[in-house]
Length: 309
Picture 1 (cartoon, rainbow, N blue to C red):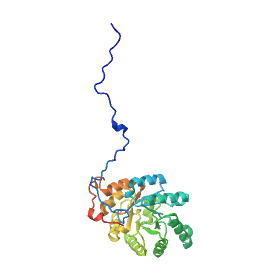
Picture 2 (picture 1 turned 180 degrees about the horizontal axis):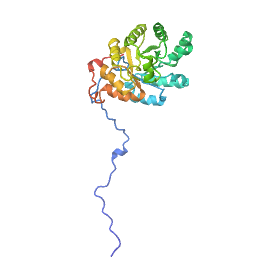
Picture 3 (picture 1 turned 120 degrees about the horizontal axis):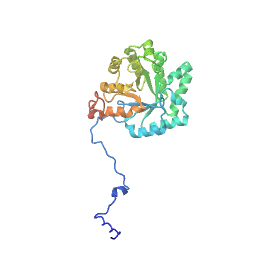
Picture 4 (picture 1 turned 135 degrees about the vertical axis):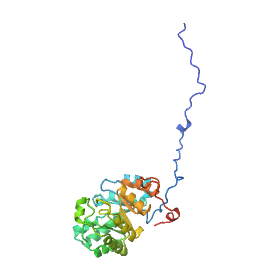
């Protein structure tokens, strides 16, 4: 018996590798614009603003911010430094970070560091003016004027608004109903300090708007942060008394910004953490949500599409 085997028959159809594997033409990414979603005011806008927290609880680098804003810049209007973090950065790195935000059409805010400037200088006009000039020179657009830790006469506060504007900066007073707000105090500590009537907040906000305030930041402590029960009555009083395009609520908690969107609409002005951009954008656009918001957040295209800052 022969030990030689016959050669196998050739395959009827030789295997051909897909030409797609050798294609040098990149495939076009899928475009989901055919799916309906809410219309929001285009940038630059006065309502529907999203201001995000920059460096503080976590570092925010140029590379990170640039990548985030490349993807999500259409939904971000401002970047805020918290806790005076910018004062610890090398000036050239700070300037570069500010430039990244500007490149993507976002303003940059100092946050409420002026409280530190006021306290260490005993309110020295010379020091405050030097602070404002430095902020302007390095590229800041907005100076937040908070006094959560301080007892500052309202007229003095209003003069700070005017002084800030005189340097070509946008003054943004922060007001709230909680004494001692802004330092991650416990519920018990804040309860012991006491709260103010919402009318106190509203009266001062109106005075600051008359003095030239670009916008009023509403402090969340005492309202939705570090409280046993939310002060929804205070929110209703504020939104009823003050112009929508002149107020922004601190809302760096998903339940809180969902509440504001439910009650003010998709064009509420909100401050959130940089890690919450996407969740808030999905909620504003009405494409996702929780049991209470899923498919319930809507806008009227004819109105929102025509709005612009």
